[in-house]
Image (cartoon, rainbow, N blue to C red; front, side):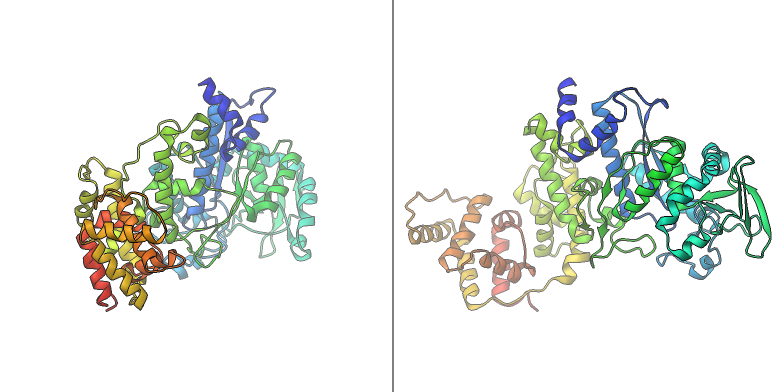
Length: 548
């Protein structure tokens, strides 16, 4: 354990770098509250999207890194800002007209368009927790409505009354002239309409813990700031939460950089130290636009898990949090294959490399073994070539390549075969475009089919390539079950027919035979799909049967 902790204390993996900043807060003495508090925030104004999941996943990685470096207990709170006013009807939910009638109500008071919960926020909160639970995250869910109404924030709300002017002095310079005229850190919950009002305060009575404001109908009303009668405006609310709960760490997207800056100032004005923070880049959809809860664009958690295992999503979230990433369906195959590559590499790595391996931050030392003897990208091409409609079809080919593999012995591979069929039929098949070969490609493909017809023909093709290159090395052992030998045959045919650069030959194979401009290592594909089957596929391409 000491060696592991020592390695963690110097590891350059980003979760360890973040955890060291948290650890530095308590170099002199441990936290008075008895634990280090990590927090993530979520606004349930729309259905939870994949960015919300990513924040919890990444924060969990930092928390685990901290726990490896320190014996101080930790806690993770997933906080829902569900007392916020309902400002805009999301476009991706039913009952648009009915929801418009609930504008400006606290989110927990907005009707649930799905009819499953007491309110829209309750529905979205439950949906988020369901996903977090399915990934096994350890967290405590916290509701803004419950914290305000139960009095958990009362002490800090009273403190905000006393420091009202300091908060105003921090916020007003950041606002435009029109906004400054009506701004207040406190948002009264109207006793008349139940709306979250954005109105200026006429009086702030810190000694009494009350504020006075004017209702839209002109009536002046005095209410206490405690007990859920007011909610704080976004940036002061975030800072008040940090101060009230003594939050040690919270990351956020780059769109909230100013919120972090002003929130930190307000937190200090309330007499507390702001948390350590990481600013991460945002996810973009297929058009390069920021994903949004209200638009429902990009990729949802449900959609990712329709086409790949959960671990691949966590792996994707680990990668370069400070770099903007396109988040759409076509990133899934690469994430799946890279995850399993890292999983296979882990057992043979030294301690330093293991701590830098992304899979360590998903699984810790309890590392599963990869049973993906066939890459996911290869399964997709197999589904394409075989027009597979079910994973049972895929297993007929997989067993040619890996005779000892079964769905029971290789459950991840079995699941991936099903995912590949689904992904192929939903995304690859509709976009496949086959083309006829050029004269040069026709001749080369015909030679490839001939070379695959017998071991003698295959060796003759390799010998011809060797002679042209002045290579007198011995010929390899002919083995049509060996990926490397089959790749050598494909390589030799491309050289013999003058493809320069050679990647044009492989591109031709993919476009003519698989209907795509990119594809697998073709020797491995032949071994998986079958030599006879590949010859038949080539003949179909030569006869223009695939373009029909």
